[in-house]
Image (tube, rainbow, N blue to C red; front, side, top):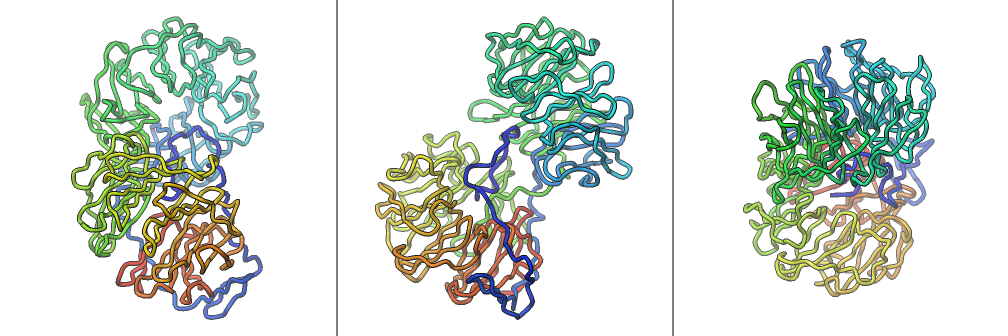
Length: 640
């Protein structure tokens, strides 16, 4: 899995990982003309003989999108999602979806609140403010002026109809006419708001890191009411409709209860770890959504209490790793949304079902070819899938678990291992962890030493490298010689020199000649850039290709000297060699498309016509079929 596809489950985070700047291809004033050479710095673009047209081959994979908020009104069902577009509408209870683009800023949306005065309208917290949307046809318009251009994490209506909004890193605002007015600032961003059901000037705010705050004068002043309860990072607040002074809070630190309208709090025992969503349904039941679902630890997606939080029951129908961000009730039933998509239950049954036609497309975290090249694997946020007909049809091998990486045993191609998001390394077929030392971790890259298959190399998300010398049963860190500030982003094995590997990091390129016992920096013109992809030439010993945030670099002498291979100020994110002729090389870029060289990297031709311009991975099968992974899905070349 490349870092641009990292699961963004911490939806309140604001910044990308350090070092991940990307640069669009700077061809201002130029255009690609078929069969006419175009000179750009040292890069020569020969736009001839493309392998297209390109065919999408991901339609058999389950769609997935991170649902951050869901709401239903008389018009239909609305879903705020972490994607672009960030708002979807369904007029038929989730059977079909359409993106809402008119009048809404690009990027994800974070919060939804039905309009209490118009059952067909809804307010939406976007990446740049608040909009009001209607469904016939789906369109939106900006609400008010004076609100900061920021993510809106929470929306709420007071009992007198006043709308409150919580912008990121800014005071809570309220809408007066067409003007947004800032309230007295808190010490942290508010992630959730709870107005009093009958007192219009009383409001509770759960914040990111500073606990729970209360105002009784409409926000002119606030006081912290968390006390010594331990509630600090508060995601959800819910009041008991039959006892309005009884309020529950879901926080990173657990479940909390106030019996005096939010003035004092106590922590409650519960079967879950991080309740990020709370809901009192119309029948008085209390529902809680778990962010850190982990069956091995006895934590699951959604729980229900019918006795005011004294006891809880696990609800069926959710994937084992369903992390829930939102719970809502509408005319058609109850809804739960999170990392694994959108789920619904109606009637009195406690069994939930996935909304099969959920918004968005599949979240594809990686692709791989089998050692024989006759099977294509797709690692997705929904599971592991395989295709024996180049993506025309897909068969699920493992569902309900996010899979990031796969590695095949070099002497037994039927044996393989996978990196499961948040659950370490598993053995294929048995579908169970093989190493307790990596339990709870995500493995975006996994490699088995081709000369000694007892050695496993695992790259840990937001970390460096770990190695096993006993077939994956135990792992230890191997980063001696690496800077503490460097995060490893990619890894390559030199098949011409056993035990030699390259590791690309956020600021340096490293080499080891002793299977990772020690590393040293390999200097080059790419130092200070993020190394997103690195590769050894399959047949020419000592020839190295490095893709970085500002270009492509080639060495013919094991890194003693380097030459720039074009793509100035272009982020190179993927490198692949044609197995029939390794001097035919494919380069994938961020926002500039796919390129091919027929002469080892001296000249390049643009072949991405019809492809999305952000290329995350390229594979070439033994018969010459090209597979390209993009944020939009998997594409296959028509010509070979």
